[in-house]
Length: 94
Length: 338
Ligand SMILES: [Fe+2]
Ligand SMILES: [Fe+2]
Image 1: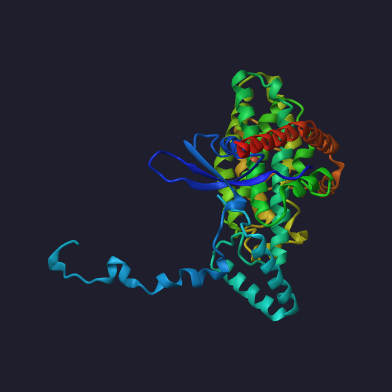
Image 2 (image 1 turned 30 degrees about the horizontal axis):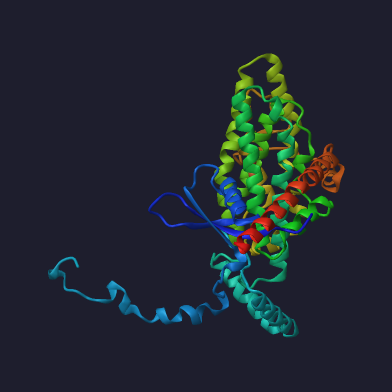
């Protein structure tokens, strides 16, 4: 077969008020066709009311091998969570 | 649902270099394999950019692309009946089911692509006959009862196979399977309902059901693959949690679910299938594995027919792909000129 068209990653919003969620990828000659292909492939049962497509090649992703270094700084900051603080029961819900 | 290998060219080159270094240093591979297996044992999902053993990548690429090919080829036996569906409603249902199967093929090709093989290469492997697809689609669909039976038995067997795959260790494959399974249930139900309608009809219609069952039941049991006694891939795939139940276990599960459904349709159950009070399962005779292997090797009734139809579809669509490419290029030029 001839070469593949570009790969596009597809994001679908199931209804207004929610965020777009990654749901898969399609090949297409251009972004307009990518939207149409994504419509046919990922919303056959009205799973969405809005679609984003982006060329996979244009996405920069973090490297899982560097996950520790990248996300490490958050690990020792327990004081960012409400449960870190002890509040006397008498004070009531806070 | 899943994401592709999103590494840049530099990242890929770096990983390759690291891989070469690893090859010179077998100890570090052993270490990586250990970490990998520990993640699988802890029921973690493996994602496209994660390190994985070559064998894992190869096995999954083969299995997922083969699964994709089966979904695509599976459209042909049913497509033949779109123009001959008995009512407009049944025609709409059949078209919707076939569209789903096209979707399943595409979800699966996308999942397989995340392992690093291009879509075009996988399609070429199918067209050249190098890649296999499910043996069941090498059997003909000769009348409308066959179409009902395909939905009931073939999609039923596929569902039995696919449900455990929703928890397989490779994330993109597992997520594709969740989506597929959700869509699959109407496929089986519409088939069974079409047969129920015929069962309430004439004697001739009931005969058609019986005939379709007698021909397709055994091949549908073969969809689960060779008996456990001669499966080569079983143990490693089980350790990697690609496969969670053996072929024979799944086959038995399907037989147990199907026989009562067949009885409800008024089908005469073939000799040799008996309920075993002790085990609580339906016993059934050994299958004709010579037939299975002959079909795998391309000697099925419809083998060459299916491949010809698929190649023709690719050839007939070539001008559409060319035109779309030319149009996209022209639009790109126009917008960069503006
Ligand atoms: Fe399917
Ligand atoms: Fe199906």
